[in-house]
Length: 231
Image 1 (tube, one colour):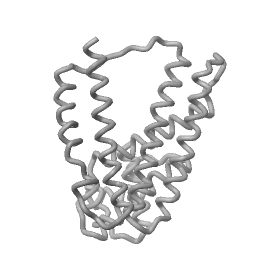
Image 2 (image 1 turned 60 degrees about the vertical axis):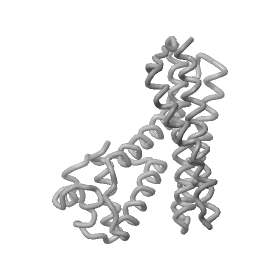
Image 3 (image 1 turned 135 degrees about the horizontal axis):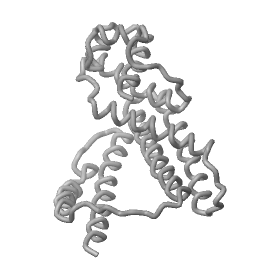
């Protein structure tokens, strides 16, 4: 996915009349690679669904802002995260259109309904993020879209498990490692950003609050995972 994603980004950034050298820097590739992307010599082209295009558009917008601000290139982690979102959306759409509900399991039917809602929510949030002028608002909307796509990934995996008829297996990480992670999450949870960071921007405060909420959630989930490992 990464060469395909870089090619899609390069072509979008070229359409914004950005220079080849600027695009090469932000994608962390050579200028000749950008030229090859533009000429279709690298990064095999594939048909994008509307939702996939919106995810790539959002990353292209972020890349444009970084170029304009002379900031660091997009990291491999950011590219991998976007690739994961695209794969999740693709899997979810395929699950909705091709998967059979022949087994008639109520859980699968409920999950398929939720899958559709999560994908629609992600699409709407990405649409709004692309139109938002305020950077904090764009960040918040993209964050919600990313959460919805992650939810869709989880739900589609559960549908696959249910309809395959396979038994659920559980491989819980080492308890010692979980305890170390729990200690880190506990320290992060103690230093509340919404209480300690003063910023006069309502949406920015919501973003800080979302980080605190995630830390609280992580601590609770890791704690339950550790409990399961001890039983």
